[in-house]
Length: 293
Image 1 (cartoon, rainbow, N blue to C red):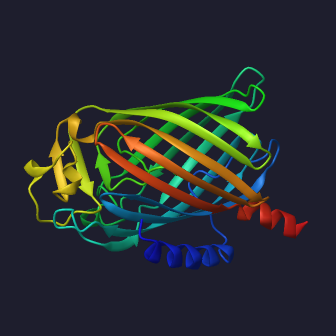
Image 2 (cartoon, rainbow, N blue to C red):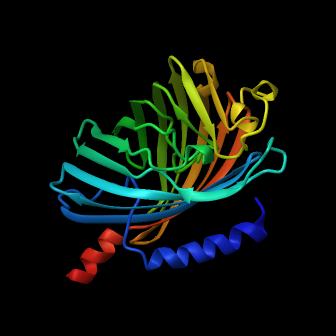
């Protein structure tokens, strides 16, 4: 990653986040029993051979009870394509606005959380920021703590492949898929933890891939390792063009009560693609509640 490009962006964005009162799609779980207004803001980026993609994601929400809450918001993307990408293009733009509903239940045997997210197709599909269709993702999360170790598993279905804190993908997809993830977190210290996981995305039926990094020109036939998003802005084909599997590792730190940071690495085995990522988040909802009290 180009330090000369990354450092100013991080500093300016963090300064902007401090004065913002909004939050990301999936805020960190609220404390047991916490209700009322929630807000979380996060800036992150992913760098790989396709270029760099940064995302400023903010949302506001409300916890109706310790088990149920909603969030809404909109992300902003900053795309810097690599010069090696066919017809590579750099652009900025809003992503699709989203609304999610989430439930969680903490249990001595296993903790369970479920989130259903819907996306309105208002972003620009020619920039790869939307599919031009309404999309959804339904993800279910399970975990259980054994002292400092917390194994977890996730299973979900969707008609698009969503980004994560560890991998902002250089493309957006339209088409049904089932997705799975399993891994564990380990608390090294009260504010530092490490983790690792493996993931598998299994599409079915016709898929369309909208590239964030390739221009409208290009030849899908020239793609290597199935990376159709490198050579064509829009590609329609079988499930294979959206299939993916790999693993991630990360380190988390919480230097303050309202600040979360993550540095991660993701290896996509299917695409033969290595990515590094970072995120910086502010829990503005907790900050608001503290100032109000």
